[in-house]
Length: 187
Image (tube, rainbow, N blue to C red):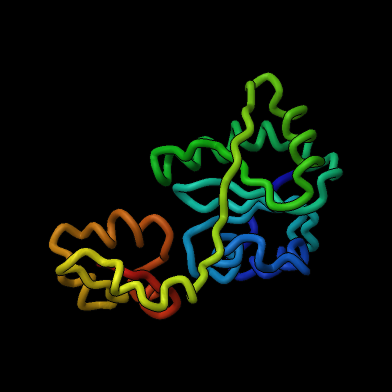
């Protein structure tokens, strides 16, 4: 059975990423309650598998690939819970599962579970910021442009609310939460 984990218990899935805490910024942000998300687990007391839903974006799956109870209930859970919830909360999220661990095992299992749905595989790329490469970024900007850290003034002067509606609103719980714990730049 798959159940929603209470927000004050999100920390319980940390054991599923132990030693791999840097595998995904989004997963950690949801566990820390900085970004919008819901976590579903196979066991509320001692999770072995988790689905992390970054609301409006995608789903992540982590944990024990051989948990038969979880695997056998996943298709029904998506049809009866995640699908309707996604439609109600954000008008639907393309159901893409990002596999962060044991890629070959999860791929095999998910293909077996969703075979009739004709799943396809897609790769995502993650980048590491090299601050040395951008030490003199000002020299590469077009004339008249500057880069500035997003702060309350930039947000308040965004007359079209693009920053809040198109960027922060998709991920952050609130503007204050972003200003306190996030970082972003505008030019």
